[in-house]
Length: 167
Image 1: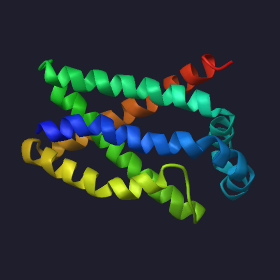
Image 2: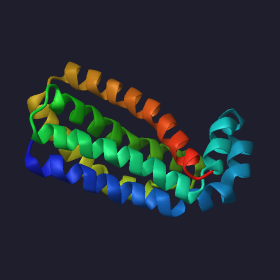
Image 3: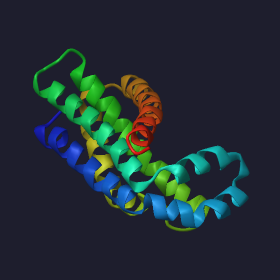
């Protein structure tokens, strides 16, 4: 991977998650009942997200950023499977943009993270294009799935940490 992509990834993460930190809690409180009414199967996750204060959410984002910075540093020192780990994280982050866009369509309006998701689609597209120059399609799919699984598992932990340090 080129140096630009390795260095820009944590910066893109900060920009995107900054948008989420700024609006997530107030937005969830304002839209919680409407979302639960429209999507009752999502009640548990909506109640959980609504319970995260801005500070708790910011702590969760910080935990994720620390992991991303460690993965980035690991690439620079040439650690075993460092590129694969970085690619898995980049792919999970890129898919995350699509999730926000789909959420916006389902809600028929703004959701936290939507603006930066739309603005960063070209960034994700070109990053994935660069990755495809070095990695086979099957390996990319595997890393994408592993990255998404790792992100979902870590997200639960990050939210737990955020709540733990704010209560």
